[in-house]
Length: 421
Image (tube, rainbow, N blue to C red; front, side, top):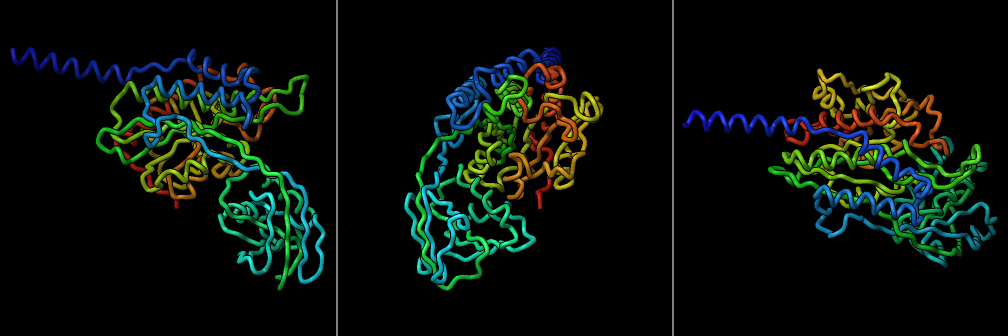
């Protein structure tokens, strides 16, 4: 009798393991998700639109049905935050007793009326000739500190383009004043006037708690926003964003079921659909402020996987492959499956720093993006023609399956990638 019971126990153990390994990812489900997110009804999922809110609700419902917990026990899958935009009304300035033309000063502020003098205690910073104007401008505007930034006159032709920072920004309580072509002033009075508006944005976040290592996290992410309605091409003005990035969002949604039904994750898994990637990565930047980077073991960001890679089917690439050991771990776990991960073949495009993985990677997290997009020849990228009919759902589904399989060693606690330095 004992022998029979042992045999039965062994049979059911093997049967249960087979059930986990034989989970079937469905191209039909992938098509259903992408079809909804990239439908004309959602009008390109532009931030601050009613349509992107519908998309958020759709993703949140999927997270609920998969049995995920809410992040930080918030009670909602929506991680909501506010963005500020400012409409210029006027600016006056006197520097070293001389008036300065208003087109040589740009104020980034959440205050309708702002007055700054040499007694206001603002830090003085410089953007020098040869610096990266836009990178330095963003860094100063996002510093959270009150600053006067003196911009070298060599940037005169591009100076006005800094105004893009006014469109959407976090309200840190600080203001940044950019002044073109002025040496360090001894005295100044700057008065800026703006019409300020506040808008809500939502990440969608769900958590599958770990069994034995609940305070160690693995993230699967994608962005669900896109460009909305824009310049018509061939009579079509809706930028549907089927590949960019409804395909990646579908992957994250499908992976919620996969790991929930496996039920064997030792580390906790965070599933997140970011907003605002197309507008400056606001969703991932806000999310990064709410986590402890040291607790994040890995981040697999999924971006544009609906078309074949340059190597054909059953393949994808990983950005920043040499910056941690994550890619090597994923490769190892797929050995013999017929699927291959490759290093990013487009290094000049700087893709590692152009998606939602970048914010966490800068904090040391092994955060990388998985993609198949042929950046040297992707005919529908950021065009109205990025529609579901251009995608290969069978290949997309195989990519999602392979992402899930390749990450199991990390999720089980067996593998731990090195940090990004």
